[in-house]
Length: 292
Image (cartoon, rainbow, N blue to C red; front, side, top):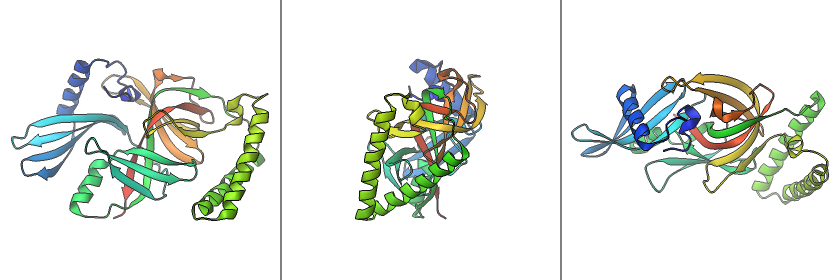
């Protein structure tokens, strides 16, 4: 079974037979279907079964010349309307199957951000039709199997404004350093050394989560999984119409980047409230907005 199936409210489905029956049922009732002619005798088909607004399971397989659909793989998805990033995006096909990953060189999080492309079917259609595949923006979402709510850090208005200016200046320096500016590289190195010294002194007397406001770090050996700490800016409850489980759709601000995280209510420790922080491991997905 897919590890993050529980994130959209299917935590009680543990056995392969149960999941197979669920997928069969969703296939029959699903309204959204897409097909692409890949060979003369078969079509690549994607079925999207929505179980709550913007949330569901995507089922992909082949339809043969007799019209029989053969399921190959599936994955849970969560779609958001907020544009998370507008930096240059590179998309590449995965080795194992006709799926795609995206890479964002996002300076705000300090790493090259890799995500699973949720609208890979659209990308493949554009590739076959020979139309533009240039990405103008990406809407990021994450699915989490376990998380907790942290209390917010108390900040004055002046501290918030100072942090925003500092973040903007650091992003400018990172961009300059990427373009080969040696002065910017030296400034960043000195800043990092100073920051390390300050954190080393403070961590002796303070809790680490009172020092680290937000973070975005790769987790495990899979390149599209991360451990994040981000401020909750919006909370929405969604009910899975099949399992009747409640799922939180949390809008997070992490390193000045906005994205959504879906997590089952029973898997979240604490009460999500705007202003508090979410900490957990996520599987990052993204919908690419292509230029016309």
